[in-house]
Amino acid sequence: MASESFIRENMLRVQENIEKACEISGRDASGVTLIAVSKTKPVELLREAYAAGARDFGENKVQELLDKIPQMPADIRWHMIGHLQRNKVKYIVDKVYMIHSVDSLRLAEEISREAVKRNITVNILVEVNVAQEESKFGAAPGEAESLVSEIAKLPGICVRGLMTIAPFVEDAEENRVYFQKLTQLSVDIMSKNTDNRGMGSVLSMGMTGDYMVAVEEGATCVRVGTGIFGERDYKKES
Ligand SMILES: *Cc1c(COP(=O)(O)O)cnc(C)c1O
Picture 1 (cartoon, rainbow, N blue to C red):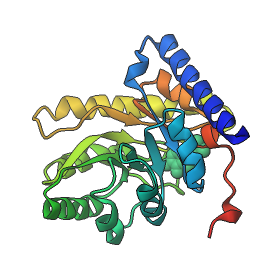
Picture 2: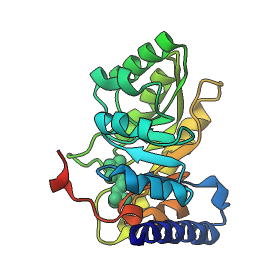
Picture 3: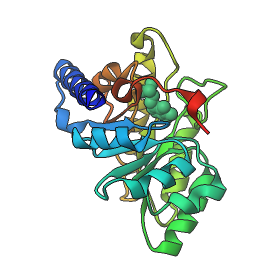
Picture 4: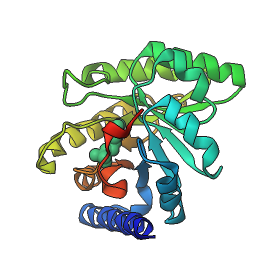
């Protein structure tokens, strides 16, 4: 099918770009996970991405995740990348591989409570609003360290690293400074949390418009939607 070749080609191109960015910055491409952001896209297209090798998928809505998970192969790692309400934690806590969008102690406490009930450990990232945009969720950079250390004390939660959503810009270079900031913040926090309940080194940053710059600056996860699946049509959303 025509659509299959376009998704396969897009994925190959994104992978090549990640490899180029790794080469430029002297990194190993195996240290970067490509998350295919499939929000708003039908399961048929997710299956094509899966057939082309995608195993990490990102969604930003609880209901959409719950609809899609049972329709897709079981070896997929599902990433919750959208803002998460506390009352919905219980529906996804044992179904996702990682929650990227933890931005408050109260949300983390709810995740911890649900994790302990199920006797599981949930991987989370602390979302940081590095650009301090009014419209965005995420902890302020100056609050990130104390938030991480509070969350790291909770049972059933493992803080694997940090995540940010950079501003929407025409020129990806404008976001380089924010990616540098998140990387530095991660280094700082890790150096202060030397016990084994500290923070991991995952850095989830970079989207279709700027993932190459993010990889050059240390991203270990990039979240690419449009660059794999094409433009999203929100009018079709129910
Ligand atoms: C939608 C979304 C993405 C992917 O955006 P694209 O520009 O389509 O690559 C990445 N991260 C988050 C948190 C998103 O909501």
